[in-house]
Length: 241
Ligand SMILES: CC(C)(COP(=O)(O)OP(=O)(O)OC[C@H]1O[C@@H](n2cnc3c(N)ncnc32)[C@H](O)[C@@H]1OP(=O)(O)O)[C@@H](O)C(=O)NCCC(=O)NCCS
Image (cartoon, rainbow, N blue to C red; front, side, top):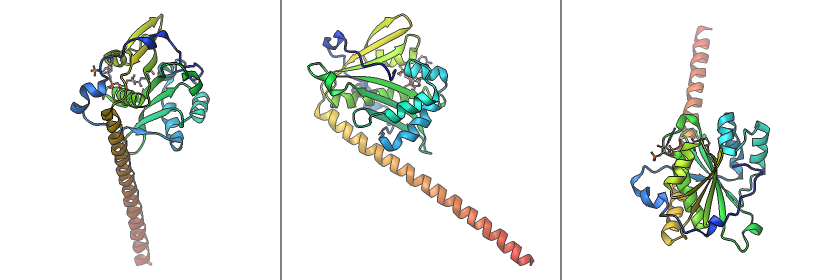
């Protein structure tokens, strides 16, 4: 996703919805992965995640190899009130995968079927574990529940993995040289899709809370260990005096 580029409005919007999104096709059978909605408080963690991407990945993710300064600027300018940013964290609460669902500004949506652009990145060391696809399915669910009719993905034509994820979900792909666009028509929201979002949101928040507690306990154990070691040395020292 190129931060400078506006979300296109293409006649493809009028096409028929795709088959059911992946979350509905296979959701119950897959291992659950907690995905949190990020807020402005997560800017630093998001920046750390994006800065960890090398030049090639930045090119794939943003359509250009953004510099560190450009990434920081983009994260700073991110509108968490309008867009949605999702993240998967590891046990140390580091963001290992993130996705950005950019909604067209209200003014652009008037009189048109609403559209959102999807962008995603997964750190190289945890690729191939299904995180990219999970984030895609999660974004589909959120977009549906906000009345979005079409999900748009811009990718380089040789980005086989991203295009595979989009195609698998039923997106229509249009290739223009070394760039490709994918358009996924979304079915309307249902009570089930809203309930699924509610459950996932609470479960992910609970998971994050548990990881936070575990991290605090780990830090406490380290401090206790250091204090014990300090006392042992002090005790040994005074015994020798
Ligand atoms: C694209 C990206 C997000 C994929 O993340 P990921 O977590 O590795 O992807 P997943 O594990 O969910 O794999 C999704 C599918 O791609 C397939 N896949 C994974 N690696 C692949 C590869 N190297 N070649 C072909 N297919 C591959 C998987 O098998 C899976 O398909 P399946 O379920 O039918 O088997 C990740 O590679 C990335 O961050 N790339 C850099 C940024 C980027 O390209 N962003 C997309 C543009 S917005």
